[in-house]
Length: 159
Image (cartoon, rainbow, N blue to C red; front, side):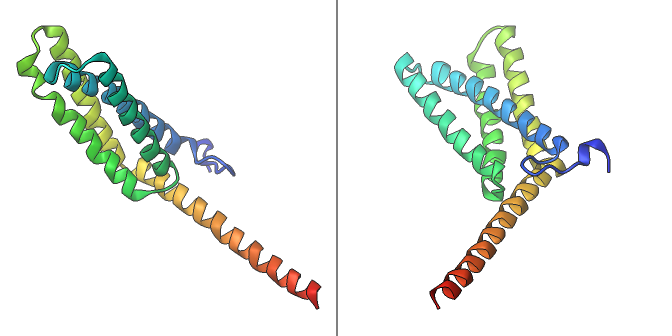
């Protein structure tokens, strides 16, 4: 067993966790850039609304990402299409924004979002979800077995 394949009690293998963390950081950066582009360039939003909307989207992203870390395949699928959505909403900025700096930043953002989409579909990211799903299932099974044994002991003590 190699060093990266070691299994620890509380944490998944490092090679799976690295992929999850990379996707999380890329999606957070993409959320900020795409959200700022969408709200400031397309809709001309007030700063109060801008912060409120970005904060709300950030909280929703964190909740969905947490469910992925708990082994939810459905939430992983949501994140996969969220990455595509973030890439698509930046495409009109090539027409709206002027300047090479904006174009370069937009291309980088779109590349990061497509990379996130690819990584979420990948074997290591899906392996993390399976690992976490199995881990939490084992905990639930162990809890149920302990509860069953405790119920037996309680019944014996009542007699």
